[in-house]
Image 1 (cartoon, rainbow, N blue to C red):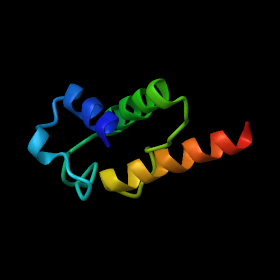
Image 2: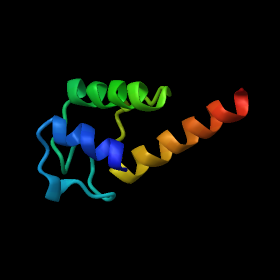
Image 3: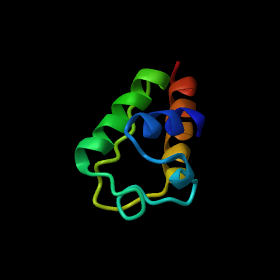
Image 4: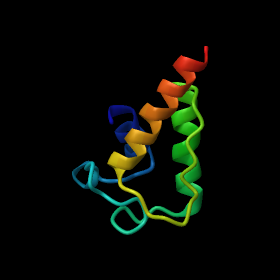
Length: 78
């Protein structure tokens, strides 16, 4: 969650709004460009692809779970 928090802070999201339950679009008001920025930031930090461009709004907790699953899949593939 710390890496995701850093990315969101860089995008100008207030720290008090960054919680595991916060929805990307509804609560944080992120647009598609910003979700791509988050995906790219996560790829740079962890080397995994996480697609956040879906129509379904997801929480920051969901994003963290996706990152953890992608890291685990990468680790088992090598």
